[in-house]
Length: 102
Image (cartoon, rainbow, N blue to C red; front, side, top):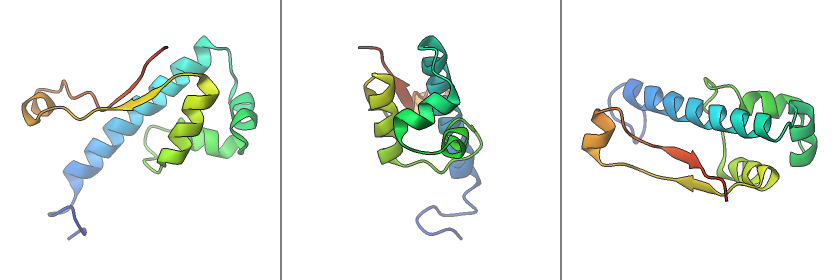
């Protein structure tokens, strides 16, 4: 049993991957819109290209709020996290992460 998750955690793991894929996709789209390469992103974030690759990997759920904050600053978009109601989550309309243009 995983601590604080109950059961085998498979639902939580699947939800984490879904959220990370949404984050990765939004970051990728924002980078493309601004014509920022992975190398440029790494330089602007003061990190390595490997970290940016992990950030854009939808299956790698390791991400910190500090990293998301740096991404937000580098891309010039505010970061917002939202949790929907249980019913919305079951219908698939759960909106976990949104990066909004100013």
